[in-house]
Amino acid sequence: VALSHSSSVDSISDIQSSGTDDTHNVSQWREVLPGEEIPFEFEAREKLRHRHTHELKLHQLLVRVCGWEQVKPVSVDKVGVFFRYAAPDKNNSSNTVGSPISRTNIIHPHVYFSALPPVRVVFAITMEGSARKVITVRSALMVKNCLDVQMEVRLDSPSAPDKPVVLPPILPGQSLAVPLHLTSWRLQSRPKGMGLFFCKVPIHWTNVERPGEVSSSKRECQSADFDDSLKRNFRFCVVIKKENFPEQQPAKRQVSGSTQQIYRQPGHTMYLLPTMVLSNLLPCDLNFYIKGTSIKGLLKPGKEAVLHSADTSQNMELGVMLESFPMCKELLIPPGTQNYVVRMRLYDTNNRLLCLTIRIILRAQGALKILVSSPYWLINKTGLPLIFRQDNSKTDAAGQFEEHELARSLSPLLFCYTDKEQPAMCTMRIGKGIHSDGVPGWCQGFSLDGGSGVRALKVIQHGNKPGLIYNIGISVRKGKGNYRDTHIVTFAPRYLLDNHSTHKLAFAQREFARGKVRNGLEVNLVVERNHEKSCSFSFIKGPKAISHFP
Image (cartoon, rainbow, N blue to C red; front, top):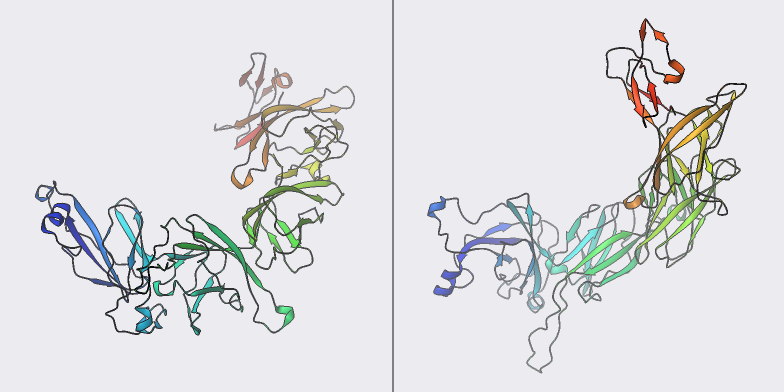
């Protein structure tokens, strides 16, 4: 669509006294091609003392769209969305409407075109930075692509279905305004470059009438491949929302009677949504599949997978597998699923149970988003191997094997309470690989639902050797946003000693290092604790050292 605009500086006093029309002080018309941006300004800079500060300046914009009459002026002093009605230009005898640049030009008989009702021209005024205003002139019918692929939009008229118009492809996350002369045409869509037909059922906005009303429906694009083994349909959801435009206005009364005909004006936004989105909120890779279909894949932590082939109108069984968890009980997702939270059962190689949290969000009719998370992340920052289990349980938590007894796990451990008859408390012990001749004991149970605390981990040594005690700090915080179903539990040492000196230092607890001399010098760095005990530390030259002294 080719646009022309002009700028004017009108004062209210001049307009009221002289009785001039809206074209008062109009500058030269300039042509703006579709998709083009042209900078302009209303007035040149001048000294402040030369300005008429007692007058209120009105900065207005005049627009004339090719094929339509000039619209009433629009003030651009305020930020917002405004609109004007433009009637067909009856003085224009051309039979071509649209722009050849955007390939939206069509042959439209002048007799038919001149009888069309006025169209709604929208002016979206936004601020770019602190001093620049951006004025976007478009139609009132928007198409927003919320998919992860480019989408093509085709429009055709029921009176001429063999002469459709295909709009430029819409990039993921971008929006496109339907040209003014095509807003009343039927709309179809498909992904670009995937060998698919346009969806059979057209998209209509006329059935969404009230401001704020939302309507959703599903569409399907058939594969154009003749080989049945390669056919894969593409499904998506269409959400139509009526924006806050005024109600429809009746047209002028006809001569034959007093009845008024109402022409429906677009003021809608069409959202193209995927039918199913799977989000991995775990700290590890996730393998997924839908039983009985060819849908499967791998998801990295924090990533999403858009399942275009998923048919939400049928029963689906979703399966999830993790490293060391090769088995699961599939989750049944029936048609018409609403918002709810459910647990999925996974089993590790030792047949121990882990329950993941599955949150299903209904974004629109037939459009689901599935969040896969864990109730608890156990993050070990102690530098020691730690083994976890539910308090009073007879087996260790799932996902822990022999290597966890020897060294700490670098990745968080997924944890949940599997025994409902036992208290919702957790306990831990030191791995057996640290003290091969000792017997590590389980600590007192602690909660994973919030707060912070300390637990003493004891190791019983054989003979008359005194037992060892490791004090471990515990911090629990609840996740935010999409991670709201997860509690992140961090285990850290009580003390972190950081050597910023230029000397090599060693450290030990005072009770075990009293009176000892190293290289002729006695180590005597004292840290008071509760005014009862003190510790003497000596450091090794280097970055940091961890202490678990009682």
